[in-house]
Image 1: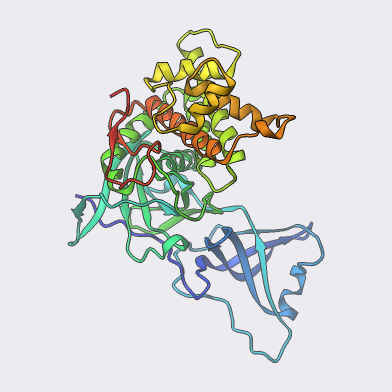
Image 2: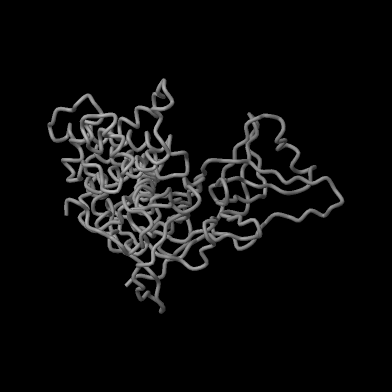
Length: 424
């Protein structure tokens, strides 16, 4: 039995800011020596995520910051500073009768403390991740919490749904990890990247992973890495794994992701393919998303065929056709895809999915001279469905998944209307 897993940081204030550190900071302006300044580090997830150091006080004390000078400014946390999560702001209030400064120094990331002496780590999860199927387990100290325990690449992990989630502006889930061997900050970064790929693939959208906290045996926070998380606001319109399926599918996907870590090149290929899928499942125009999905398929086709000692065809459609045959995915145009079937009859002699799909991809990447040959809206929609269906199924096949999934070939169905993967 494990203890309750909680977020170390929570949104506060009307603007949803998450104060991750409050106290002394060392600020360097240009070539000057670092100067100690009282301030705080804030993370904001709403809109475009931002991470910055904020300094508030009389102009007479903070004039050296001079944000309009164009000189580079950097911030560090002193080595002896306690990293205990703040319970309140340390910033003074504007008295209204003197010249006042409220300045922000934007950063991508900042690390403080020593990771190698931490015994457990807490990864804060934000964004599109949802689950209605976590088991509600009993935890130490009494009570219950929705949790799933899993292992990944030398880590004993548990993902938990936390209270007070704050929507997409806060942390709906937390992953607690205990390394099975001594680790470094680079090892934590590697796990964070794998968690991003794993959870984003499950969610069908980029899920924010971070900040990350390292704690000692007494539960004191002794290391932290704060950064702007990679995430995409909103919920995906279509996903292979609806929330009701999450807990059932999760263990198989974790096992598949863990297996990839034994082959660096294969892991890199699947990670890139998932990134292609996330982009193709975004909000951009279909004219952009269809070529992205096709690019992911072509890359996977080359990698898989080379791995199995097969000759790699030069034509993209042939390459992807062989990839789909290897994966056990049907290559015929799906029933109900009337626009693609009609286009196939007009423009090719091979009435299968890869041929007509890459014919449309070519028209999008190399616009035709005659606008009458431009793909119609219906053809674009069906091409997007088919390309993403191919891509997510081949990724599932690479992860050795044999469970059920929600097929995007038949939109508008209930989330519980699942079916086995074709090769199962």
